[in-house]
Length: 235
Image 1: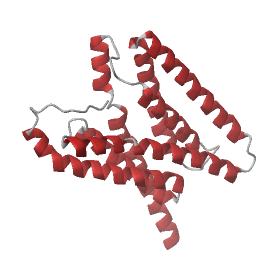
Image 2 (image 1 turned 180 degrees about the vertical axis):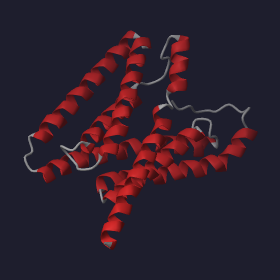
Image 3 (image 1 turned 90 degrees about the horizontal axis):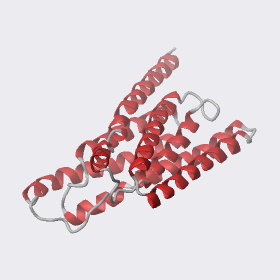
């Protein structure tokens, strides 16, 4: 009976942190809105890159596929958060294409087609694997690698903050959302005993914590020196 109660508590806790992770993920999904307001207002993508949205789309698609019952069991909340994420990234890509110059538009269309092709290969290839455990391992390693590469991207921002001693290009709400979402899915994966979920999100939690520490460390000095021009920029 005690084992049953412990299992029930574990399952309930997993659902709670999974739902929390879905909620916190909206902070990340909505973060490009200021950028696209500027793009729409100016009628141009200027020097902004569309690559982050391409990378995020393929990451969401792979993780979405991993969360489906065909690959792993009882990971519905992984599927929901990545389904919403994929929809947001596709919307951002469409908006980017609408306002990009011709050369950039062609590159983005090629990359989008490449993402669709890669995902189709992963989807069909994994379904060809008869053994369910091998199939889960195959897609799991891909999703884990994709998440780790995505969570590694803040290293550029961390380096920029340290060099400039300014948090101008590291918005607090974005760092905070990253930390909360990663921590939630780290606990979700831990309670599920799913290394493909808790390992990359553990790394994301650690990097998110570093960003928060840097923010509070440099925020005061950034405010005091806000009139000094930055010699580097990040987009």
